[in-house]
Image 1: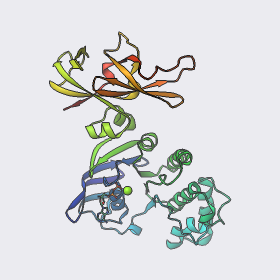
Image 2: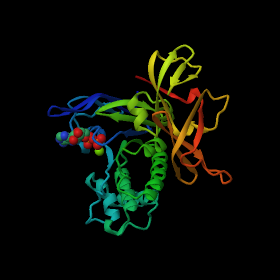
Image 3: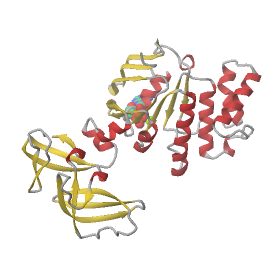
Image 4: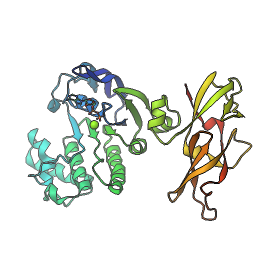
Length: 349
Ligand SMILES: Nc1ncnc2c1ncn2[C@@H]1O[C@H](COP(=O)(O)OP(=O)(O)O)[C@@H](O)[C@H]1O
Ligand SMILES: [Mg+2]
């Protein structure tokens, strides 16, 4: 049985159903992200797990025990929020010790645990400082230490990195994941940042309008999105409309030209979705789809060059790796792009 089990979870505020039949089985030690746009119900799910919000219906079990009727302080959960929620009038050490003090842990034991936690987050010497004397990244590490100090069964993180600047955010990602692995603590991480979710998680739950649209490993989510929403929300995507001429051989018509994709397609019309990295410059006999278009934009990003190419009425994104000996095509020039049929994501109409 899963360590954290959520079944048929529902939440309505008045007539507004914000979480709809949400199901999730989390293994012990697993790192799960809830990913979705603002307002899709991520925080509400997390708050129900923590006990700050009562479900309208459904079951939440931790280690086999139904916790829905337990108060937050009876649930053995650690939580970190987006905004720095440290107590401003307490030192770092006092912040980290807070939960243990409430729980009546003797002071010598508390001090040892605080030292252990501060070492874990890489701030062994900052126990005497106050929160205002720390950077944003350091404050969030202390918030993490405070959440972990009481040895929770489950760690809940609600967009803990979104208030930080880009560089710190990326380095703290790795650090949080390392600490989580080291402790083997079952974790749910809420984010609206797809890169965060894809890079950190064992599995990602993509949410839309209170519904979990897909629960899968990052590779699966990105390469085999289950719904149009997931395809569009996670990663860059270009879409081309195609009329299926022969479903069996996958012959399609795109902008007046015929292509044989050699893979079965549904009859009628389909949208073919292309990630920017599956398109290559130039024709290639081993790649079934060849498109010709006009370069509308060239974004030189450094290691990657993102071309925007108009093919018929569609504008496609194509990512090329930078090559010092080969300048990118010029805006206005005509280019040929190719893609392997196996790399196309077929979205039925
Ligand atoms: N206490 C509340 N009362 C009424 N509506 C709420 C309350 N909390 C959240 N909501 C609504 O529930 C929806 C989901 O919110 P939330 O879970 O915070 O989304 P997310 O974290 O994905 O941005 C939103 O439409 C929000 O306005
Ligand atoms: Mg939220």
